Image 1 (cartoon, rainbow, N blue to C red):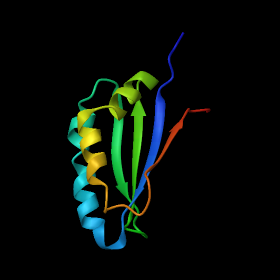
Image 2 (cartoon, rainbow, N blue to C red; image 1 turned 120 degrees about the vertical axis):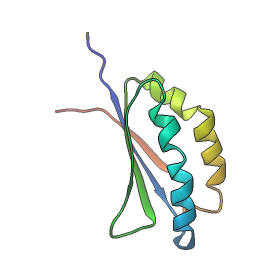
Image 3 (cartoon, rainbow, N blue to C red; image 1 turned 90 degrees about the vertical axis):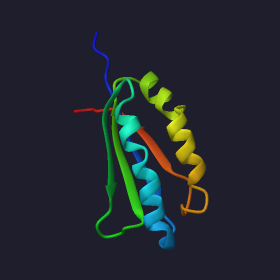
Image 4 (tube, rainbow, N blue to C red; image 1 turned 45 degrees about the horizontal axis):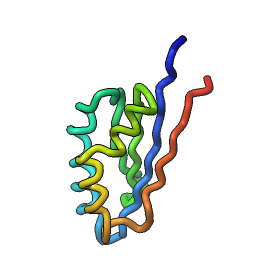
Length: 99
């Protein structure tokens, strides 16, 4: 039996005057997250037509690996830094590949 990976799309929207600050904070996640067990893909995108819009595209080996990431010290530290930088709560969605 094969285990299907977990895909995540996580969108974070900056306050208009905080784009640069939020980008710097989000970039702090890249290196430590890519080193996590079970991290297959972890990319940060910025919308070309709306620079306040950042999106993480992720792939994890399992739900357990993703859960460990969500509890990781570096993610928790960045989460605390989002106050005053974001327009709303991050929108984090889990997906499975259908075809």
